[in-house]
Amino acid sequence: MAQLRELLGTMESRFGQADPENELVPFGRFDRLHVARFVILEALTSGELRSYGMSPYPWQPALVFLGDCDGDAGSFLEQLAEQAGPGLRRIFSHCKGFVGTGGDLLQWMKLFSVKPSANYINWIGRTVQQVHEEAALHRTLSDHLAEIVDEVGRENSRALRQRLLTHVELEKAAGRIRLSPPAAAPFNWRVRNLLHMLGVPLLLLLVAPLLLIASPYLVWRLRVLEESDPELVIRPGRGHIARLSIQEDRNITNHFNVLGDVKPGLFRLGLLKIALLLLDYSARHVYRRGFLTRVRTIHFARWVLLDNNRRLFFASNYDGSLESYMDDFINKVAWGLNLVFSNGVGYPRTRWLIKQGAEREQEFKYTLRRHQLPSEVWYKAYPEL
Image 1 (cartoon, helix red, strand yellow):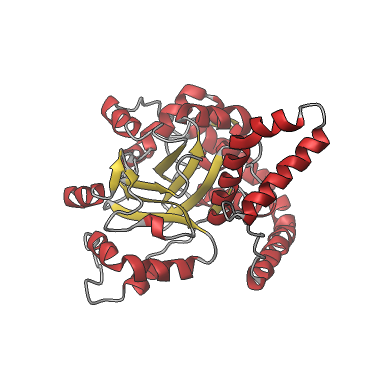
Image 2: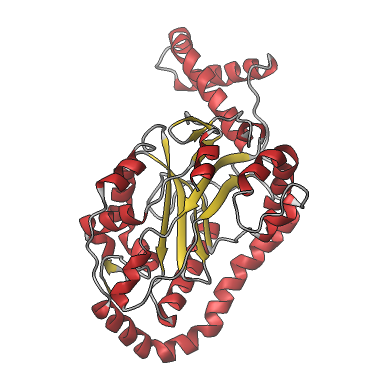
């Protein structure tokens, strides 16, 4: 693993941030890629299962490549295999069962791809190209705003607006900026999205009578588990914190990885899967224009069940510091955190599923830090935005 970390380190420009033109995977050449990372998943907290009288599940460190791109993931993998094949082969050669130099890299990546149980995109449809073009628009307006205000004056807002629009048209005509019209979503994506939007409520409607009948038992079982789950208030080690902190706040945006065990028993697993289903539905059809409930700082996030549903991996990209990120969730959507993460080992005790938990601030922050893992390499297509 030390050799793999050393190899991934050659991709960096500084503190875990990738050089866009690195020799292994030149992320900057993929114009559909928003953010990407390599992270080694280590089960640092698997010993917590002993509090349930269970032995830790066996787990070998796993290399994860995670990217958020525009368009179809399959075609992006094809482009990745074609343009960065030699570098990816060097990286993945450290993985058990890799196909080697003569094998089919694309098929191997597809074989080991894991579909997230829930996925969040801050603004569905906003492409890398649009982000760059809007940034250029912002720069030209900022650079000339004072001059235009002096020319037109502050009092006549309508004339000021028209002068700014004229300036933009002149810049476009000169080829200094470009504002491409948004591309229409592919027809097959719209059909699948519509079926998903209608299908999930229909499914819930069909099972609602069964849930209603079973609700007294389910509520009783939930409270029994909440009262009996072990409480683990363990402060994360200084060395672990130092390893994480060296990567943080080097950019406007930070990256976040958490891996933990799902609490034992079918009840907890079923509850987690239902929570992730509702979360994915909400992120896809309700919170699709710049915010997740009341939180506006997340760019991308995903929740992935691993190891036969025994572990949950969460990864996100967010603006601001980790402290403000955690406070945002605690103050605005603690109930949402509880709904999902209370099914994980070591999470602060909840009441009625959505109360307490993350509201127990210090315990929650200890839990988060204890389960957090650093990225070996992280890339963002627009690092200053």
